[in-house]
Length: 404
Image 1 (cartoon, one colour):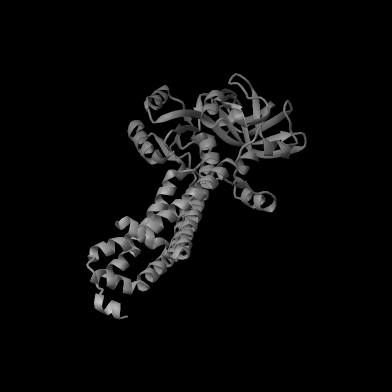
Image 2 (cartoon, rainbow, N blue to C red; image 1 turned 120 degrees about the vertical axis):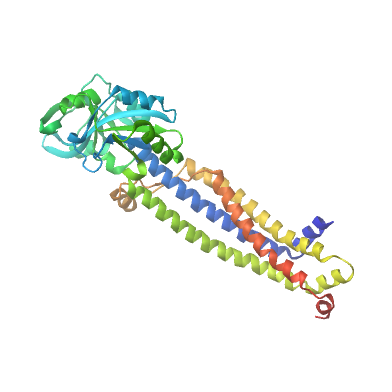
């Protein structure tokens, strides 16, 4: 009986009910899209820079991160590898020897980051083989290089061309060598795509006179949200001989950008929900004020105030639920579509993003928590607003209400 009354009361003024539902649906749609875009862009950024290169965690010699030179490299110990392999939270490991060198082809000379790495382990961690756009992937026993696409264009280099690398090796030794370009890779991060040269680890160690030495070991993990906990476990397991760093410490500018943008989202969505809250409250206020005589009559003929309060509260919740469901129906296919076919900017906008090392790609993230959180926020608002008609009915005098 009460449910039937709630349903009939909603459609006594169908226009107002539909407008209120539409406003709630719009708020949910807009908030879900905003949060999905935010998470999608950040996930893409982290995947491109962290998941596709640095790894979520790295181990270095103490002091290396503050002064990234070969003299702060460390000798690879079998005991360390065994300890890492025994840690079930670590799924992928890529040992690296990195340094800045000059790369030359013909009359062109550019600065680059030389990444000496194990071909198999690097591919397991970063899927480097899939990024080959020309040529083929290298092998561990070769002395061939993979050149980043942007750097190849700047040098005017192509596959099977020969480049010269020269720089400073371990303990100040001179380092120079000629290498054939076996493949060209496209890296999603523009800054990486303009500077990276990959060489097999053994060949790099020989080139730099740094046999059996590494500058870092990068890790891949299945649960990025547990990065800090895994770092603490590693520190307990390995001790203080090495510095163990999560990606947030290695790239604080990205972590801070995510935090700042997350804060701005909460401010904007807060303003949005305040506006919608006032709209919903206005609807409840009108529903209550225009039916004052009706409430007085119902109480006078014997309806309990608690039953009337339940009806009014139910009307508020039901309008909100319909609005939230409509918002979900509108937002879900849109979020899925934009995840599969993300927005990509070109021209001047893309150049601005590339100056900061970001790819101008805007995918969405399909995350059930986004939908759940937005619905809970709207329902919480409805519960709070629904308290007003309860207070109004509870303080209502039937005789005075019918007189007015």
